[in-house]
Every structure is written in structure tokens, then in C-alpha cells.
Length: 96
Image 1 (cartoon, rainbow, N blue to C red):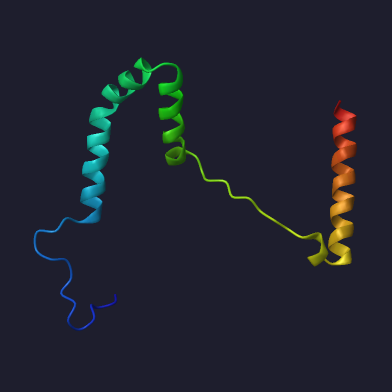
Image 2: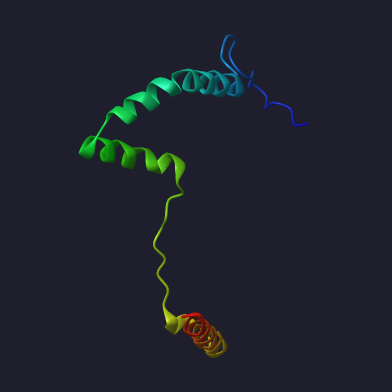
């Protein structure tokens, strides 16, 4: 196990362990959940949607756009993509 570097005395006396803080925060949220749910259910229309949308980043992964240039692909990579697209299109047309 790695030792502290010289001069590093670790956590200061009285400071909280991160796991203890997380645990207490989790307990607090759990204890307030019913109240929160009642408040959210009491909202309607625009207020409900605005608050719901504000909460989404905390429960949904963030999507990032991806840009790609086909000019950077090799000939074999392009052929693979075209073949894959053709197969996908054929499969979709057969299921319709």
C-alpha cells in the first residue's frame, strides 16, 4: 500500500469521510422523497415540464454529437459501410 508523501498528514481531524457524507446525503434524499414526489405531482403544465426537464441530466446520460469525415476512411472501410447500409436497408424492406 502506498504511503503518504512526506509532509502529507492525511485528512484533518474532524473532517468527514466521503463515504459517510454520501451515505448521509442518500439518507436525507430518501427521507424527503415522498414530499418531493407530492410536490412534483402537484405541478401542472409548464411548471411540471420545466422541472422535469431540469431533472433529466441527473438520470439520463448526456448525448454528444459526433462528426466524422468520410474522406478520412480507407477504401475498404467505405466498402464495408456501403455493404452494411445495403444489408440494413434490405432487412428493413423485408420486414415492412
